[in-house]
Amino acid sequence: MAEPVSVAAEYLAGSRARAARTVLGQVVLPGEELLLPEQEDAEGPGGAGERPLSLNAGARSRVRVVCGPGLRRCGDRLLVTKCGRLRHKEPGSGYGGGVYWVDSQQKRYVPVKGDHVIGIVTAKSGDIFKVDVGGSEPASLSYLSFEGATKRNRPNVQVGDLIYGQFVVANKDMEPEMVCIDSCGRANGMGVIGQDGLLFKVTLGLIRKLLAPDCEIIQEVGKLYPLEIVFGMNGRIWVKAKTIQQTLILANILEACEHMTSDQRKQIFSRLAES
Amino acid sequence: MEEEMHTDAKIRAEIGTGCSPRGPGCSLRHFACEQNLLSRPDGSASFLQGVAEKSRERLIRNTCEAVILGTLHPRTSITVVLQVVSDAGSLLACCLNAACMALVDAGVPMRALFCGVTCALDSDGTLVLDPTSKQEKEARAVLTFALDSVERKLLMSSTKGLYSDSELQQCLAAAQAASQHVFRFYRESLQRRYSKS
Image (cartoon, rainbow over all chains, first blue to last red; front, side, top):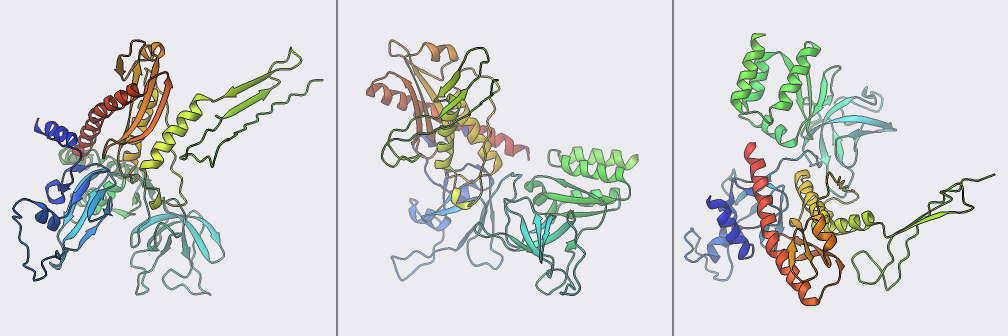
C-alpha cells in the first residue's frame, strides 16, 4: 500500500505544493496548492521541460491557464477549494495552457452565466416572472424574453409552469436573470415546457455525465421507449413518456444510473425490454 | 386567580472593549429565564446560565467561518445541523469532524479542511487523547482543539479544568500529531467515495 505511506511522509514535511500535471485524475482536497507547468520547470532541479529561449532573462513566459470550478488563484499557484478529481483540457486553438478544474459531486446548484436550466415559475409581478432555479435566489425572467413576445402579445405563462431557459446574468453579487431566447431572437428549444411529464432532481455530476457527447445511457433509454426529455444543468430532469408507468420507470432508471455500473445497467435494460 | 406568566427572557450582556465574536474581551454567557413554573408555591423561577449547547454551537460556527470562503456566497446563509446519535466522549471533536465532512460533501468552497482532537489530563498529569466519557469525567482538565489541514494551525480551542502552560503546549503538540491520522482518514474515505463513480 504505497499510497498511505507517501501521503503520511508528505504531511510530515508540511504540505508541499504539488505540480498540477502529476495530480491529474486523482482526488484533491480543499487546501491543497498546485503548481502550474511553467513554474514547476523553473523550480525543478534540471528543468526537463521545453522552455522557449527568451532574450529577457528575468521574465518567465507565462502560460495562460484558465482556472475552472473548484480552483482559485492564490498568488501564482492554484488553491483547491472543493473535493473532487482534478481534470485538465488542452486548449482547442493550441495557444495557452488549457483549463484546469475539479470534478466534484454536488447536489446544490450555483447559477452560472450561459447554463441552460429548468426553473419553476413562483411569482408573476408586473413584467417580471420570478423563477425558482434551485439557487439561493429566484431568477428573474422578463415577459419579453420569449420568442415572438411583444407588449401586446404576451406569452402564456402561469405560476407553477416549468421553464427551460439560460442565464444571461449570473454572478455572486447580482440577482440571476434568465431568458428563453438566444442571441438571434429564436427560441431554440427554450420556453415553457409542455403539460404532463415528471420533474425530478438528481446530482449535478450525473447531469454532466448524461450530457457528455459519448454517453450511451440516453441512447439506450431512447431505444427502450419513445420519450421526451429535458436536462437542466441545475440538477433537474423533466421526462415524459406515453404512459405514467413508463415515465416512472424512466425516472427511476435515470436516478439509479449514478450508482450502477454499465453491466448492471445493461441487465436492467434488457429485462425491461423483454417485459 | 393565577396568571400564567411565562416570561422567557433571553439577555446577553457583553462587558469589555469592543466585544466581537473574534476579538478579545470577556463576555457573559447566554442566559435564559422562565418564571412561575410551579403552581403550588407563591412564586418560582428557573434560571439557566451558559447553556452548554449554545457555546458548543458558537465554537463550531467560529471554526467553520474561519475556513469557508464566504465571499463567494454573499447574502446567503449556510446552515449546519448536527444531530448527536450517541455520546461516547470527545463530543465536540466529533461534531467538528462531522461538520467538516458535511461541508465537503455539500461542495461549499473552503480554504482548508479542519478536524477536532480532544485531550484529557488526569490527576497525575498523563495525557490521554480522544478520551471516553468516563475518562473525561475523572480528568483534571479536558482540552479540545480544532486544527486546519494546511499547516496544522490552531483554529479553535475549548478547555475546561486546571492545567499548566507547559501541559497546554504538550497537549497541543499531541493534538497536532493526532490530527495527521484524522486527515489521512478524511483523504481515504473521500477517495473511496470518488472511486465508486
